[in-house]
Length: 83
Image (cartoon, rainbow, N blue to C red; front, top):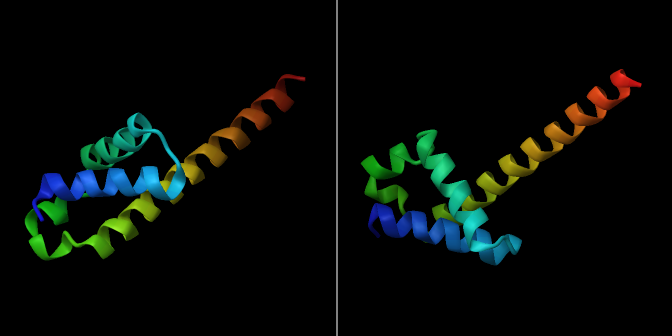
């Protein structure tokens, strides 16, 4: 599949697997692309498979959840320091 179709597939899987809205799923893919997460996929067509798209969707979602959890912990710590 083409690189663009691969990115679309990852975004679609994010909406299907995790019930994310389209805008959130697209933002995750665009942000990962900007961070060069998908650079190897662009260079190596053999990486652009449905199985790999699912793995990448899971990885992106887990990374997002980790960031959200870290931010929540930081906010709680900051609010405790203020008291």
